[in-house]
Amino acid sequence: MRRQTLTSIRDVPAGQWNTLAADHPFLRHEFLNALEQTGCASPASGWTAQHLALFDEQGLAAAAPLYRKSHSWGEFVFDFAWARAFEQYGLDYFPKLVCAIPFTPASGPRLLCRPGLPPEGLRARLLSGMREHAQSERLSSVHALFLDEAGRRACADAGWLLRRDCHFQWHNRGYRDFADFLDAFCAEKRKKARRERRRVLEQGIEFRTLDGTQLDERLLECVYNFHALTFMRHGHTPYLNRACFAQLARALGPAFLVKLAECGGRMVAAAVFFRSADTLYGRYWGSEADYHSLHFETCYYQGIDYCIEHGLKRFEPGTQGEHKIARGFEPALTWSAHWIANAPLRRAIAAYLEREGGAIDAYASDADAHAPFRESLRKIDSKEPPP
Image (cartoon, rainbow, N blue to C red):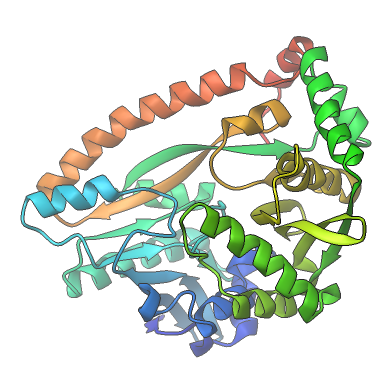
């Protein structure tokens, strides 16, 4: 087994990488390549590719998307306080290594293994490879973000510090249509959701669903401008540039989705989603003006409609948002793992994570208590294993 650090995702054949990535859109060679080729994830933006790869006689056996980072932006697992602690002790926190998908707070595999090979040993070798790389470069730490359950177990077995957070997800419990989904709500919450959807219709707004194969340059320009304008309204620069949007649409095709909101034949808003065989991921949104309830409709209700129509099991709408609870999204724990080189600071961070974890658990429990579903259905559902 030969270990290699890849300074570009193009250093490995797309077919070999995608055999490991399977159906996860953000792990696809095409997705990572678009970020790198268009400069969104590049040394100039603080994301230097250091992808870890293990090769056997048949080619790529295991891999991890890995970046050398000079800052913490675009990760969505916030460690700014850790960086300040290092600085107070006269130590450098940056650069660090991050095993993650740039700008993408969606859980999934991070320690990728070729089907047919025993995964446990390969995952352990990937983690030890990251640690050895960090030690050889005298880096402060390694961080694996938004881990799936297999990755979380591997990191725990390797002695990494585990950190949890709470996001909100929608789960398809075999709903026939949106009305069937709303029937599970208590009367007050059901009435509110219906009123929000009605207000969008009363403004004369209609929706079209297009995938990457159906988006021409004019439509992509409009979608990108909506998204960029929303970032700038909040005082931020968009993570993705126009060229990246176009390349993602072309490369991912049916896995790249856009919900277009139109009023009187004019496009007024858009939301960008990605999808796998069973999951929808909400990522970007924007509008030309402030329309009543349009954000909820475009980003949430339209996504739920799509999942029900196409039989998708789960919808991850992105970060933030107690406002998602009233619209049928439920709390779900997300996981990251951290290897800290400095022993005293590692102990301090471990103590902090223990306190933080208790607060996250309490927050998730409280959020679950405010879910809009009827109490009788909540009791039945609580007896089922988690999705």
